[in-house]
Length: 352
Picture 1 (cartoon, one colour):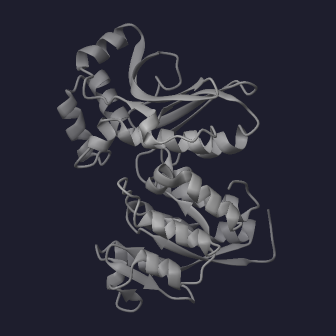
Picture 2 (cartoon, one colour; picture 1 turned 135 degrees about the vertical axis):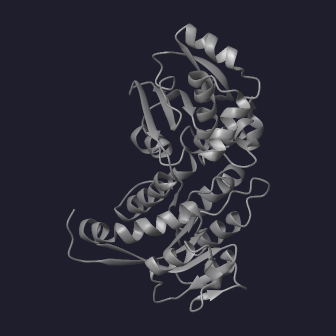
Picture 3 (cartoon, helix red, strand yellow; picture 1 turned 90 degrees about the vertical axis):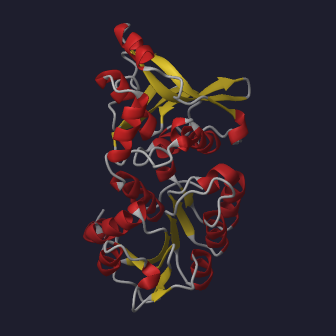
């Protein structure tokens, strides 16, 4: 869509790590496309990380901020715009902006400080795009209602399986359907480990170490391998796509610790694959939620996933069964999912 009028959108970003920094890079590199096709100019007026904030109401030079971060320093240390004493919440409360983006590390204990920042942004009339799943897991109904009450949009496609459009596919394209069942391989770490164990004969310990060296697993991988990361994402899908008010306590969770190489090889000999699958199964007026290793038939879309892939399958009443997968080797697709949500908001998109 060509346009002659350019709309200047001031935005704030909390979290300038792997995802946030890449998002800023995309804003810079895709700026000409956004202006030409949407008449949209994204102007960074504030950014926060663990060292403080950097802000300028006239706009910060994004390439310079990205280059500064890539030296290993935080934005609060910037000699011109930095302030070590500032916090992300203070930035949201003080800076006039149209849009707030959240890409800070998830705190699943209480969701802070991201939860407070998102609430403040919505209450101030800002649209919100988040890659941080914790606030949605802990307070989805409240945040959705806050967005509706203030006439703004809350978008979060990047919270489930990175760049895979799992949320958007379910909310938008399957809006009029009844989803009988969804199945997802939503955690890259566990899929990498199980695939390397099955195909290369690595022990669990060897596959985990390999995943950590490749940057696909955290130093402490417990949230992933015990199944809780997938469970968190399933809760988001239940609330946002299925319209089922669920919390983590509603999910039966089993991790991959009990899966042996022998089990994986025996499944392969039968033409099957073992994956850690998040499942929501229609059950009366609601859904039964589960995360557990499953033996999938070889022709199942999720069985064919490689070690660096994630995927989701929706089984519906009128749209058949729809599968989507992604190869995600770096955080770039997650950052791209955030940009996708921004584009949807400002191109007359949909959502809360």
